[in-house]
Image 1 (cartoon, rainbow, N blue to C red):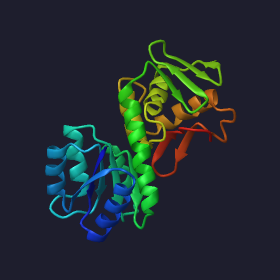
Image 2: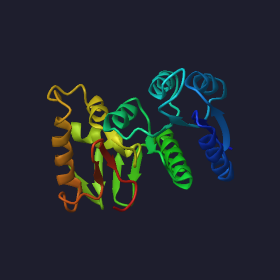
Image 3: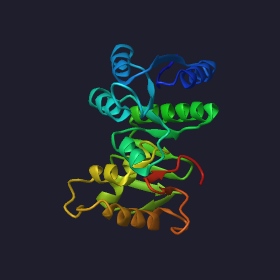
Image 4: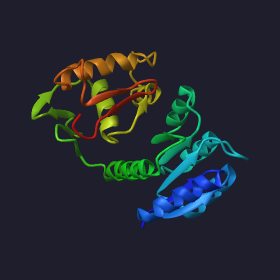
Length: 229
């Protein structure tokens, strides 16, 4: 049974999430503040953390920063904050997804399952990655097939596509994508990522102007769809 750590200082939200997650077959741990969350994560090593941003004693972003230094546990940010800067900050710290309050408990359970599936797939680290029913990436050979057709990508384009293919469905900020190719001298600004994305779309999309594989998440960044668009 997989374990989820729910971190929130609102008892009613904790109760609802515990009920829904336990009914979905998860073991649930809880913490009401940031310091307790760090202690619980270190002691119990949960499979996933649902983490509120606004917490007493230690802010959710500080908790995420601490967890990321110590482990690769998946994190879903839960927050009433709707500002783009907060969402981006959480994602740049390595959060795998975010849900804004008010939220549907059923949707959150679905997101927990989806993030865990992506995390398990990443840990498998297959030499050949398949995304949806269209994209196949042979990592050792640096070859990409889309609908059976070979696609020629530059080294930078390949690294960007591979990063997103290892976690299909996850939203990546421009800064995170830039980190993946930081050794390439031309990468001076985050907006250069937009140019690479445009080139990748031109090569892998049936219609680059209506992308179904490499999707834009407005105000945040990009993701590779994990199914038909």
